[in-house]
Length: 190
Ligand SMILES: Cc1cc2nc3c(=O)[nH]c(=O)nc-3n(C[C@H](O)[C@H](O)[C@H](O)COP(=O)(O)O)c2cc1C
Image (cartoon, helix red, strand yellow):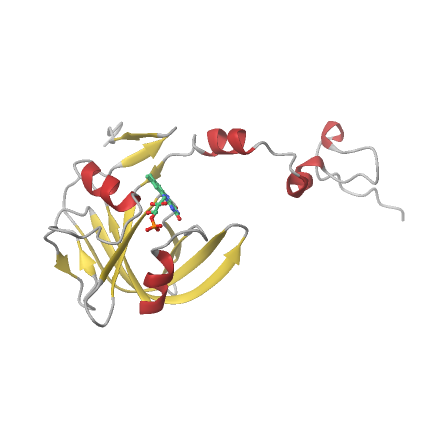
């Protein structure tokens, strides 16, 4: 029996030649970068500093909004560093990273670690995770990982970490990023 091919997109979004969905043409520059940023900026994220220390004690840190939980069994988390990041290759070389989930009162720390520079840790007191990675005193949560894999994805990498230890504060409001601005969180229901 002849079956009709299932439609991927509404007819209006298919091109006339060969029926290639227009959304697949992003590679040809049809998605406006400004619009991409504005639309994706409507998805609110938390803000974390990814930290690691070299064998000689040199510390590295990078702000990300792309941190996410991936798997419970096995326990995996991930984030997406930009290929242009100066800090990511140094963190990668250590084979480890710690995710410091920032609190709403840690905006200054966020700005410090979102700037390019070699000495982001200058005059900054902090603790360390069981494996020796920098751990910020007032982080809402921390997750210490061994790098499980790094996958090239477009102009970023996907970094997957195997969770080795973790913890959180009993209280604490996270720092949020939404539409290009920082926010804190209001609880709507208990
Ligand atoms: C709220 C916020 C979220 C960010 N998220 C990411 C991210 O997910 N991945 C990334 O590579 N850079 C992200 N950045 C930018 C980096 O923090 C910044 O480019 C980087 O720290 C530059 O320093 P580097 O060259 O030392 O890596 C973010 C910045 C801010 C302020």
